[in-house]
Image (tube, rainbow, N blue to C red; front, side, top):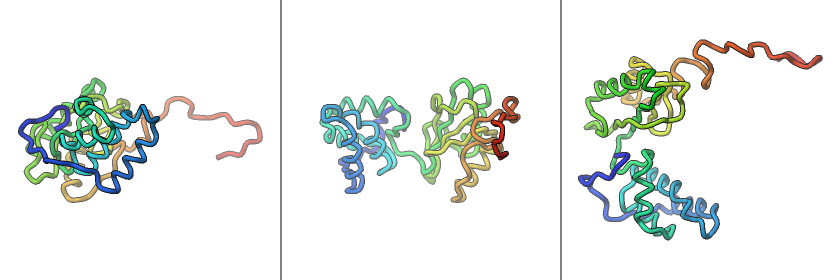
Length: 208
């Protein structure tokens, strides 16, 4: 799964972008100068992942060929970032942030809730293929800790009960609203604003 190449994973013999994704790859590559097109490696790897759900080695080799890069350079990128899945993941891929702010706010509880609810450990997939679970470093939503990223969406201000509800909703085929689960807007203070409650308006300005 994310973070390393598992030798036990059955690797497909080949990979090629669909015509639609190849057109998108060409559009991305065109953004870069001719001698800097290797800079497109990240979005092309992500495009490959969106196509098959993970990044097999054949996809890395295909990206390397398109960008005229040594395959090892693409492997280095793909194995560095946890955003790239190096083996198949579940339909709903759970990434529990474990960095300090989330850890202080209950990240360990989030991981244990997922393990208990789904019956899997870290870097495992449920038998029905619906869920997979890993821990990751900072997701960048520290003010709304603890945070779990599910596919491309952030679920913030979590507690075990709310996380269990989210997993139940996903298992039932419904997508629960992402973002803060406590009802606050963005990253505003949990107890509401404490400063700038009244904004002075120029004389004669209409009230909102």
